[in-house]
Image (cartoon, rainbow, N blue to C red; front, side, top):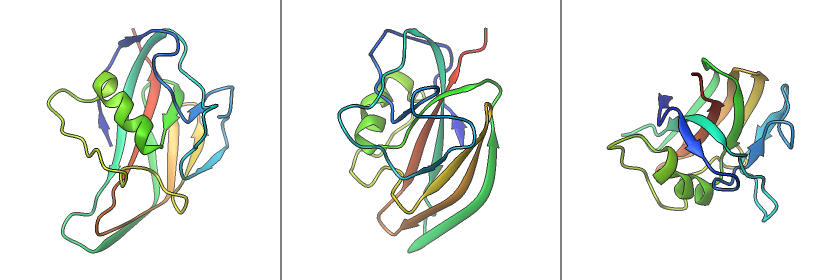
Length: 145
């Protein structure tokens, strides 16, 4: 997990997400794979920070990670798991100088699970990848002034 851009001002409906706090994301929810569909919510106008969970076990044919608790300094407001939405938000939230995978293999698949354990933490229940796949999840938090 690494921090991406911090304190980025976003206009209303500039960034589409898979899960939005109070809409389809609540503390205690376990999220499986990616959300699809045209009715995915958008971030409201505001200032946000981004963090990327990236799983790519280089040099092996497959990998699995379980029970990893990740804590943040501010409240989680949205999560992006879908590869197309990750790619679309890279130019806004992506880390300076970071090179991101742009293929369809970049996403949280249906056999990957994470739990929104508290307003500031995520538990990666299970992340699994094969030789040509990576798991990325963008966690968007409220910007701390």
